[in-house]
Image (cartoon, rainbow, N blue to C red; front, side, top):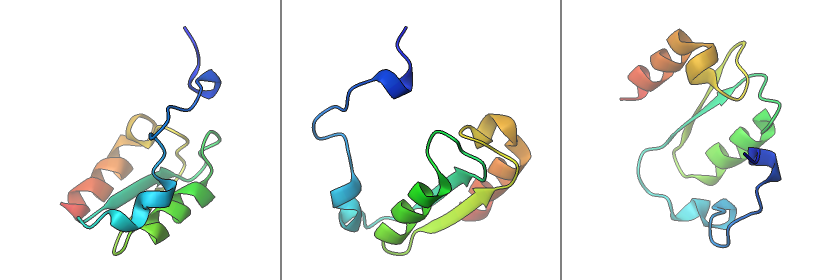
Length: 80
């Protein structure tokens, strides 16, 4: 099984240049200590999407929903 980091990019999969086209309410949830995708990436996505809300889950890495489920659920419940 290949790791996520070893996967080659799929053409058209990246959204970096299309963030401004997102017009629905958006919640960006990021782990404070994400070593795979740094918090700067989460900030990039949140600032690129008009009106997006960024929630940083404390003491979580790349999988805040598993590592800090209560913090993750609080973020999602507050958004919904």
